[in-house]
Amino acid sequence: MAHQLTSSPVQPDQTKESIPDMSIILVGWNNKSYLEPCLRSLYEGDLHFTYDVVVVDNGSTDGSQAMLRELFPEVKIIQNDSNVGLGKASNQGIEVTQGRYVMLLNNDTLVNGPSFNAMVEFLEANPKAGGVGGRLLNPDGSLQAGINKFPSLTEEFLISTRLGNLIWPGYPDRSGPDKVQAVDWIGSACVLLRREALDQVGLLDESYFIYGDEADLQYRLKKAGWDIYYLPNVTTIHYGGRSMNRWSRRKMVYRGKMLFFQKNYGLFPTLLLRLLHGSLSLAKLLVWGVAFLIPSRREQAQKELSSNLDVFKYCLNLA
Image (cartoon, rainbow, N blue to C red; front, side):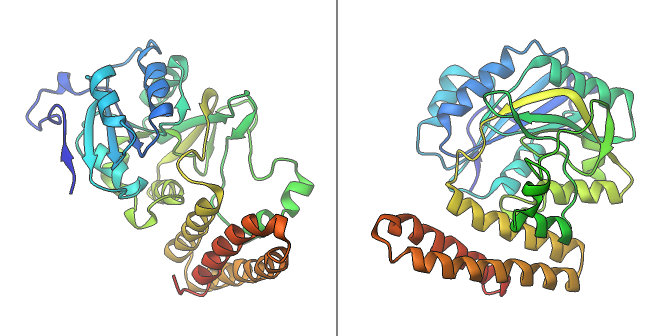
């Protein structure tokens, strides 16, 4: 059961002048060491627009809540008793705010004010834009992700077989040309959305739990006639993958892929996707089954066997 720890949400009868330009939503789960510098970078970013910040905590036990109350008393906190998932928690934050624009921001990021200002200014000047974002950078400044395309069977084949990376180094990450352009979708580690557009198409689909929900939302926005834009001058440092190890993350990523296909593409493409990933998972199970017999590889093999077995079950629709 969720309950709010700090100040009350904006009330519907407040005047228009009191509504902030931007509401910034972060979801936390035992990530205090990243959440604190993220919020510091935000509050020290010299933003030119009014904003409020909501942190939805998914049952953290690392002292995140006490840190927020002590260092960032202006932050609204929604406290969940357990990890309800990224999609549901993000929706909780959106629902208690009224900012004209909604920023979905991962807590393992470092932001800069000029990028945030540029995103708000772009949405102000382009009323048909439903969302906007830019490049995600690794801590060393190298590209992590930029432009994303909606999933396809061809892309899934190139990614899962790693043929894509052999042909295009870094595939499927795309930085995009140095020009503003409409794209399929922007990763929710840092994306600014127009609330009017969200009111039209609805919030994040909570059945995803994590991974795939941001692509699904922007797919719905595109179908409803809203454009998603990429700004090459917008950058955010994203540490990434700090809440899950890669074996746990693999299961959720593939679950998200299959749910996206099932929901948006229909039966036949979904069956082909299940066949593709099921076959590859079975092959990996055989390889790691052999590796399990080698004492020095046994610990890793056990984790790989478990996560690939879960993917295989998803492909058979057994999980």
